[in-house]
Length: 343
Image 1 (cartoon, rainbow, N blue to C red):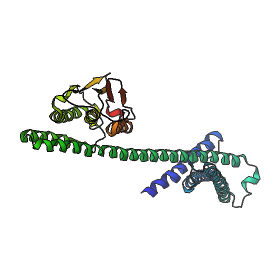
Image 2: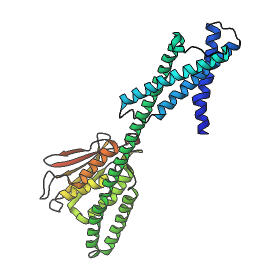
Image 3: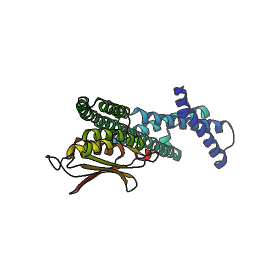
């Protein structure tokens, strides 16, 4: 079926169009009488048009020299073959037509000085230029698409790798707390385990997602905050002031990781409680801010978690996370995403 479709498109259709156009030109502009010679000449012109069109299409597809890698060589080879093909077809069709009309072998067209000969060459070269230009654009478009697909595959691989960094850190902290609780309060340990199960179920479900609804992220954060409150008691104070709207998204587990990052890098105790506020700022940003009371570590360290979030937002939406480190506070603002601005 595909072969028949190509034959129709590359030969039959140009033949019909060439025949109709030739008939109109001969009849309307040259006032040629409708006789035997009229039909022979028009059929010859139609055959010439079909052969030139299909021949140039074959040249455009048969040459394996890349337009992108060696454009000048491709251009030279294409036009050289086009000129050779055109001269051959024009002369062969001319000879066959004259033999049918006159019954004798004619003088070669190029020796007659006929304007029709050179006009045919020029028109064919213009058609060839169109075909080869189209071939160049198609090859260029295919290269761009392949490059974008490769880029997306690379970004997806990197994004998956970054997502997988979340689980070991989360599990280590959670099981450490649970182990301590089991020796102190079995009932509280059971409640903690249930919350931990809900959080980890969400972690598993979001593994294959590029973005998570803001409402789900907030629900997951509430479970995670309960676990932190059990762990730190009065040493941690968290204020959550975000009302989600439909069709709003964040990178999965990003809020949990920011809160975890604040706890990891700051002193958390009853005497020096850590205050964390999660709120919506400037319309389409979610900001997590905490008071600074750093532990004994490099003050310039952002931690693996924060670097993870920053990289994921760059890959996911091409947007930057805003980080502000002031004397008394440290804040991170995440852009709220919508479906249209996710890469």
